Length: 109
Image (cartoon, rainbow, N blue to C red; front, side, top):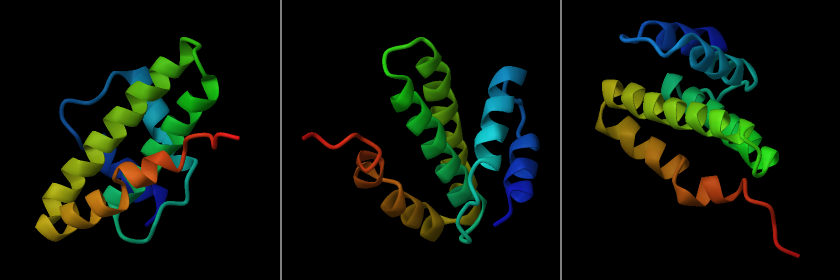
């Protein structure tokens, strides 16, 4: 799935996200090649990019904006999956559940 399909899907949403948030979301979409399964999965991968950035920022205030973008992208991923049907929602939640998100956390020594 190309980044342009995911960006087109994001831009078609109404109401649109505020410009700074929309820009961060699009940057995250462009930062990942995205899986081949479809828009929902590309958006979920972009959410993980933002979540990773938030984790890298630690306790700084900039982490908040990345967390907001991650939340918005994951919400959009669920919306895109819902548009495709139950099977896509089930596949998305299996692929991007707690175990997948936990993979982003630093390993304890």
